[in-house]
Length: 174
Image 1 (spheres, rainbow, N blue to C red):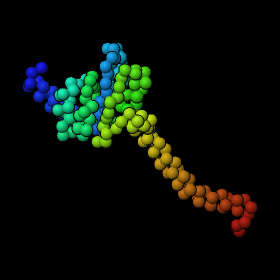
Image 2 (cartoon, rainbow, N blue to C red):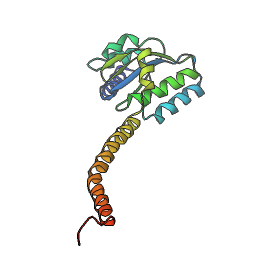
Image 3 (cartoon, rainbow, N blue to C red):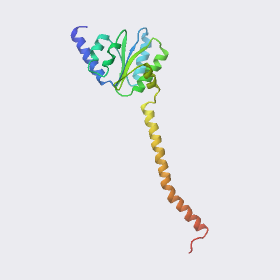
C-alpha cells in the first residue's frame, strides 16, 4: 500500500469514525474464518458495521473524533464495530458473540462520546432496546389516557344510572 492509498484509507476511516456515535474496538486473534463470518452476520443483523483495521492507520484516523481516547487500544489484531444509532443492539450482539467465542476480546469503546469498558458494555447490553422502551412508554401513556377517559365518562354514566333508578322507583311526579 503506497502513501496515497494510506491517506485515502485514513480519510475514509476518519469520516466513518466521525459519523459513528457508538464504536467498540475488539481483538479477534485466533478466530477462524467461519467464526469471523458469524460475527460479521450478527453485527450486520444489529444494524451495525464491522471492519478489520490496520492499527497505525486507525490511530491516525482517530484524530479529531470522539474516539481519540481509544488510540492506544489499537494494538495487536484490531477490528472496529460501530453504528450511528443504537448502542444497545450493538452491545448485545458483541456480548452474545463473546460468550460463545472466548478468543474474541473486547478492548474498549465509545458510546455517545463517553469511553466505556467491559463492565459498561455488559450493562449496556442488559438494557432494553429502543423499541422496547418506546413500547413500554406507550403502554404507560395509554394506561393514563384510559383512566382519564373512564373517569370522565363515569360522571354522565352514574347520572344516567341514578335517573334510571329514580324513574323505576317512581320518584318523579308525572
